[in-house]
Image 1: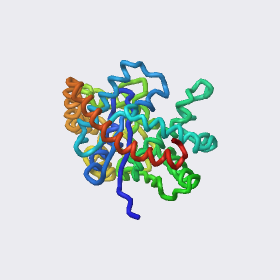
Image 2: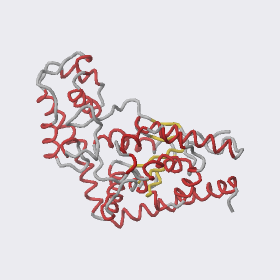
Image 3: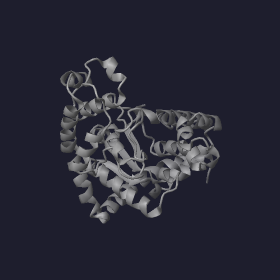
Image 4: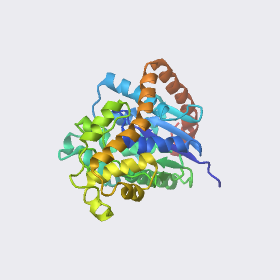
Length: 334
């Protein structure tokens, strides 16, 4: 049986998207829409596993949508919508909650990281959100999921749940087992303040990241202040690995210029980090500021963004309801 390729992925609306999101996810989303059918979701239900101010959440959903469009996603090529607007996500999530096992969720390392030392105070939603993620994917019978390496464990859980559903209800191959699409050429983009930490929206210092809406001056200032090293740039990759902040700057430069890290390291070897930072700021400004300006432009017409989400919801809901009708029958729900 030939299964049509379909990619699904979601982005949480929790504030400014940054360079790590752009290089690690959004650029990949854009390229995929030319290769297969794609559904891209602003996962607002995932965002509320930790408290969000309602007005900020609304604005963040629209800003994430604007970021999708500004980086090149096309509503005529990809379905773009917000998760909470399709009720099938939560309905299927409950069914999958009853399929998934507590032991499986206990192995999820992201919950341990996000909940911290006092897990008793974490929300139930934060604990079971991998099941909702599985519902997001399986609701559309997605075959491929573009994810970062840190989400691979959750995708493996989705595959486990799909297999158990297919077995429990004697419907082999009903849910395809989704394959991860982890860009091989894109390296992890780390914090500009700490090369051991992933670049993150949640890090307190805004100088730790390049936001997609940053101005040219802000980008230049952040790169100038980025942690590096007092010694010249080494030509030995083994030495460079011991200098994570320096390696991060070279990695970012490599990703933006589309040159290999080895080539960039060779070009920069022996030079001061001020030279690298000057060049890095220049290429980042050229790459990122047009995206930021387009985001700002799109945010001025919120009704246009809402219309795109509404149109995406209609398309997503048709697929979701077709699949849910069969799922209900298989489970025995009337």
